[in-house]
Length: 129
Image: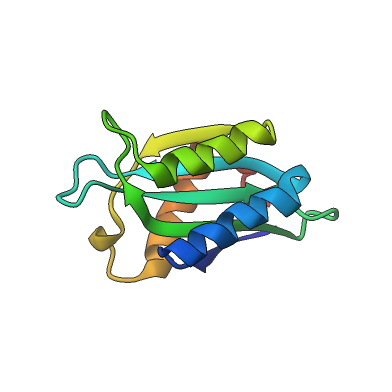
């Protein structure tokens, strides 16, 4: 099964697209995962919608906004709270994990491979088949 990240931007209009994806596809969503980078200089967080695999398990989409908002601990922020509210409204799993920042990697594909391995290690997505 192919598992791929689909990159959204990090602006306000992308946030609206992200929340609309939740609203119209909530029954297909396995989880919403926050990737926090508290040890980096910028202390930003990325967020992804992890979809359930397709019917015949050929593909699993993961929509991501990189550096979407400021690290929400100890002081939260509006973008984080908005996404959390959508997750609660549709009774979706809302998870978070500390990871390396995207700037650590020379290429976004390498970063996505790293995040995929993190998700697999947490058993939040199925293993390779």
